[in-house]
Length: 102
Ligand code: HEC
Image 1 (cartoon, rainbow, N blue to C red):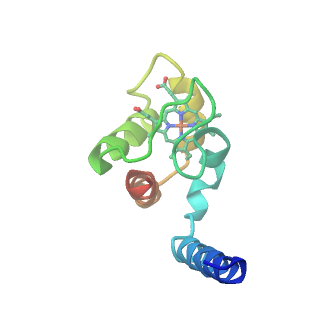
Image 2 (image 1 turned 120 degrees about the vertical axis):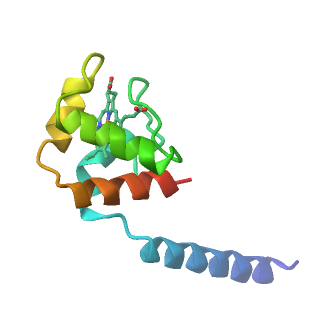
């Protein structure tokens, strides 16, 4: 492949990637989660669990139990701060987003 064709192909691939990202826009409720869990649910911080690709029902249960205070121990208090004001719909949206994250 000539350098020029390679460049064209690379640019086209980049455009496709950007387009895919724009379509799967991150839900607004997930903005506060990113600093610890990363956009794709694969954190760079050692003490933060990987939530990407976890089963939807597991994530819903985890978030709900942090919210109602029934999940304690470890760093549960940290998570409680970030879910205490979420409603069930926001929790479902967040759980779906991170569950489908690859
Ligand atoms: C300040 C950093 C921080 C932020 C912000 C944060 N988390 Fe967490 N998250 C953690 C830590 C630390 C844990 C482990 C808590 C424990 O020990 O139970 C955790 C645990 C979780 C778990 C349970 C994972 C498992 O394996 O059981 C889920 C789900 C989760 N977070 C989702 C979220 C979502 C959704 C948000 C945004 C609303 C969020 N987190 C915001 C640090 C954070």
